[in-house]
Amino acid sequence: MEETFREIKDMLSAGFPLLYLVTSEYSRVTQKLRKIAFEGDYAFHTWDCVDFLRTHNKNQNNRLEGIVSHPEYESTQDCETLLEYLHKGLGKSEDDSKEIFLIEDFHKYFDREKVIVSLRKLSNEMKKLNKHIIFLSPSYQLPDEIEKYVTVISVPLPDRRDLDRRFKSIYPGSIDEDLKKYILDAALGLTDTEAELAFRLANQVVGLNNKDAVQIVANEKEQIIKKSGILDYVQVNLDMKNNVGGLDNLKMWLKQRSKSFERKARDFGLQEPKGIMLLGVPGCGKSLTAKCVATEWKQPLLRLDIGKVFQAEVGSSENNIRRAIATAEAVAPCVLWIDEIEKGLNVGGERDGGTNSRVFSTILTWMQEKTKPVFVVATANDISQLPPEFLRKGRFDEIFFVDLPTKEERKEILRIHLTKNNQTGIHELDCLADATRLFNGAEIEEAVKESMFMAYVDNPTNPVVNVHHLETACAQIIPLAKTMSEKIRGLRAWADDRARRASIIANQELLPENQINIKKTKREKDEDTFG
Image 1: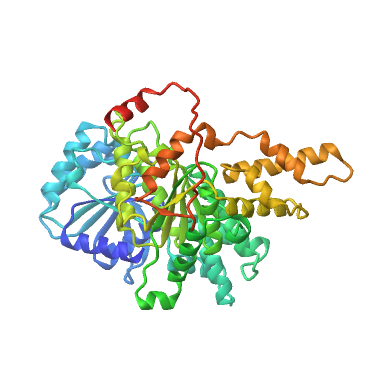
Image 2: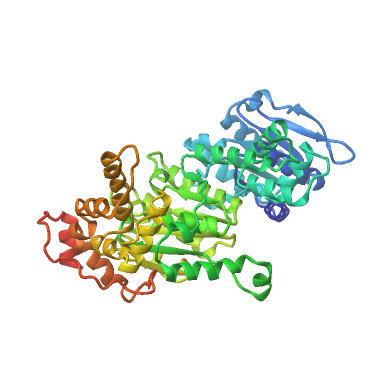
């Protein structure tokens, strides 16, 4: 946060005429800019569509003395008359007085031709004088005509130092430092106002010196992040050992990389991992693995719904992805889970006006250049829909191929699901693993659930699942590997020399050759023709 405002201060000193700050925290940003103005001996004015043009006066200690209506208050109530006044004032200016005009929500008027032309002219004139216009807007909406004249800065959400100051303003008493750290961690990703309200609520309910305050603040954050409609704050408590069967290579890799967050590792020069791509057969535990990573690493889990990013309004999709990234970085260290990423990033469509490409480019650039410890777990079922630049080294640390479970892995998966459902008396796992040949993890779980229904129907007073129930349930399930064997074969062929196996031992079980005669789509026919 402080670095951002130091950058703004330097830009003002260098004579940047037009700045555009992307933020929803108008009050906090106004206070910061006013402090810069007072300390730099700038006259500080603000304008919005309610209070119009006002001047902020300072006292001898560079503190706010009062806010009064500007002499041109009456004549600057419209956006165009405001720019007209600024233009005339610059033309008459003969002194070296420095001024900052902070204008809120001006993006609503960028569709007016007169506004665009006025801003272009103001930009050229203000370069010669110590005058600056700073726009505040919750989203990036600049027309192409003035994009080159305006410097855009995204204001980050409060960091730990900002949150600590807010915390102390509400609870100035003594508190255990570890407890305060957990509370501040829980508040990361909130705006200053949101954090203040969360702290006040926790203080009212249990007191901020109570360990339960952490959960209250975390619950508030979950609700606020959900309201964005783009990110979900997922609370999970799933470990690898008791929830994921097989995938030993992947488990080992994740366990090794978890050490990189330790202080000694950072001192040694190890960098936090960037992320992994999990490619594979549907139902084989990719999404479950993403959830378990967050638990194993003791980090919050954010789920990005790519489908919700895209909106009809021009510029909204790009703003949505920027906002999601900003939230993830504010919460960091965290795990960002992007499920079935290929469905949302179908780049190259002719009807979207290039929106997909711009969203995709934003994600690519961020993944390549991000410095905050946001570990991305992206899952995909169809790698052919992703452009090759998405998969190159530097964006993901590794691409893992999650195949159908082997016989030993199926035994482990069966054991996990039977244990979860308190059915620990079954020991014939070897024959059950044969009965679930070509099953994925989700299908094995479904077989266990179905067997429990059968056991209950047979004996409602004392239901006990036996091998017969399980074998019957397995016989009723047609595995995905039979209906989609062609797709799975293609996945295996692609991953053979392009991805790392998630399992130590490759699945050598042959897929059925007989295919259901399903008419191919035009896209599939084109892929067959052109490769």
